[in-house]
Amino acid sequence: MDINNAFLHGDLNEEVYMSLPPGFHSNKPNQVCKLRRSLYGLKQASRQWNSKLTAALVQNGFHQSKSEPSLFTRGMDTNFIALLIYVDDIIAASPSISVIKSVKQFLDKEFKIKDLGPLGYFLGIEASKVKGGMNLCQRKFALDILEEAGFLESKPVPTPMVQGLKLARNDGTPLADPTIFRRLVGRMLYLTATCPDIAYSVQQLSQFVDCPTDKHLIAAHRILRYIKLSPGQGLLYTSDSQLQLRVFSDSDWTACGDTRRSITGYCVFLGDALVPWKSKKQMKVSRSSSEAEYRALAATVCEVQWLVYLLQDLHIQLDKPATLFCDSKSAIAIAENHVFHERTKHIDIDCHIVREKLNQGLIKLLPVSSANQVADGFTKPLGSQMFQTYVSKLGVQNLHAPAYGGVLEHDVEGDNVN
Image 1 (spheres, one colour):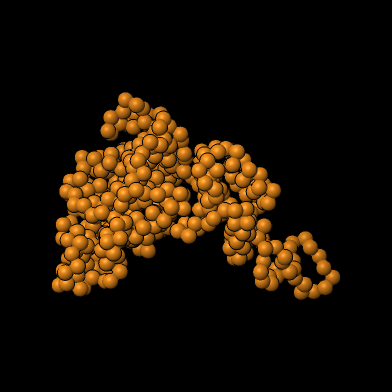
Image 2: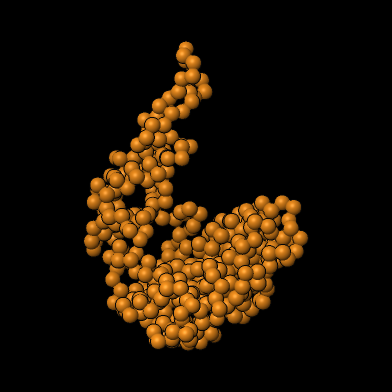
């Protein structure tokens, strides 16, 4: 659904004046208009609209999620309905179509809505129902990026970043027009919403948007050539997955050559479906690889806790603790053994949330070999063979590829590219 003229529905709680609009003539000089309702362009407009919509939904029996303010839920079992809101765009999901219709009638009565029908295209993300689930991708957005950058006819590459590549801040010649690089990285950041395979590469490039060089631009162009390989690649969410959390956490110690900070990478699976994932540079320098792994565990545990709260708002109770896999035995030992004073006294107290949640039964820590560490691709560039294995474990699917296609054979604009 889409709300018509959403910002005009907001009520102002303060006095706001505006100049007379063009074409409005008055005999008195220096006259102004006092606004009674919100207008587009006011800095208060979005906040007032959100307050108006929230109040209307709460009055209608909806509960606003504390962990995700854009999520509203109501009812139980077959009468359950969930609304996901982005400004004036709304997705409704329910086991009962009659419940959805009643909510649509309520919103249309309150605000006047545009009914866009079944979910198909939302904020640039294409949702396609497939056998046994749903596929989310951004094929049109990816092709738009390639067309704008002039890479529609480029030669594809199997990985988004060269294995072992280390980018530095002062490496190369500064670009004469950095806005081209900034716009490109910004658009690729949004593409990571359905393309976790480029998350690490885009995270690396986003560090240099203030002063990009020609080498940074070359690295960005390689990501475009990788996207050209399969622009329709997205995430598959199966409908028959078991509701059990499997989590992988990893870090690359002192990966940043400029700051010597480590990279945190994690991914969370709900059954076979990949839900949250992240590739991010840590805020502080770690004195050991164990500390870097432990900080990555702390960030991962916070994400798992948030996800558990979100599932509870959706009336989903997990029967078992989340299984958290880590390839650092020392980090697991620190979490399970509180006697390691000499190894842990320099680690901030907030990192010990891992031990607390472990004792509470939220997570269960298990070791995993580096070869089976799914989160490895969120912390470093991989070679072609390892990268293909990593992508296959993420549950990524190219809906627009022919069924007979091989690992490196994809359909791009009707042409097969090997």
